[in-house]
Length: 283
Image 1: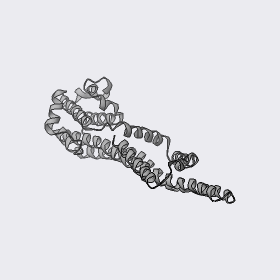
Image 2: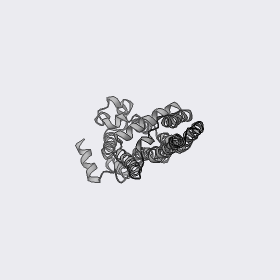
Image 3: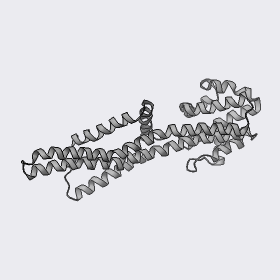
Image 4: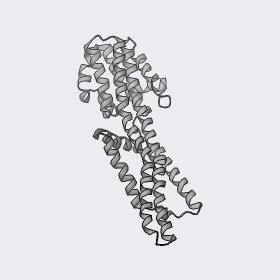
């Protein structure tokens, strides 16, 4: 919603101001300039990035429009899932959760949290480290170090689309200049046509510069920043899991272990202590 509201404000401010200043909107309609700028931007984006980054960028762009799944409700489900796993392990022994972590799709615990099941990478992160705990006596600091290394790697992966989009935002003003230069080259053919024809051709060329700067700084650049923010909220889910698992390996009770995880969450999405407690009991 904020993405759409922001885009509307940008468009309304720029074009309303242009019209009030006496501008003609039809002059800005230059489809060939749009083809040059955005065609070149798309081509350079494909050249610069591997296929998995292209797919991930498209996926995260749709996620921005539909809303991030990493909200307070998601985090409460995540902590409730961890609580159930820790509680079962504490009461019945570590071996009791083997079936849950080996086959989460058929697990009664995991199946109660469809939002977590949709995030395959996060689900794998949880089950992998629970499996490590159940199969060995790794020291707490060694486990924490391993988890931090994986989180660092995951951070690079989920921020890659935002960085790729940001580079295109930086390139768009330059591509706008390319379109403008080509327009001026075409204008040279009209030197004998009179000032009106030349003026329209120069205006069309300058629209290319305008579009490149406008789209780069008004839309594509801010979109890359929004993707970075969305990536940070996803990363917090991994940090939450790490804090909770390290706490339980250190001997903390399940309720206290998920409190460690809760404190790792961003304050604007973090559930309250009693709110989380009520949610865990409801599950």
